[in-house]
View 1 (tube, rainbow, N blue to C red):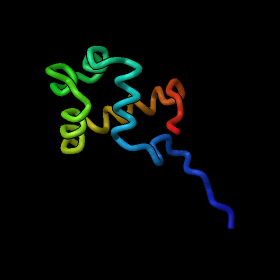
View 2: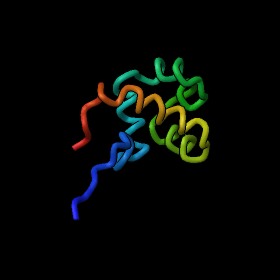
View 3: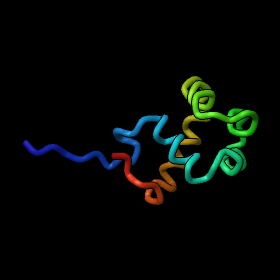
View 4: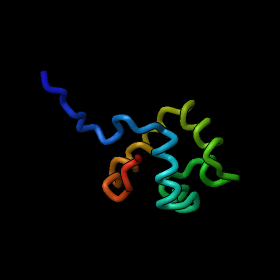
Length: 78
């Protein structure tokens, strides 16, 4: 039986990897302009943003949607 590849661009990618790639691509300032949430605009850090995003479904969905919209611009994690 042949395994099917998932067409979901988020398949196998952690929230941390998504956030790190977005921050590397945009920086926290530009990311905070695109998704205006406190964890990106006031004392931003990866750990504090991850904590917020894991607890806040609507914010995580916005971050994931931005990643999916631009994922071809990011290098694939190794």
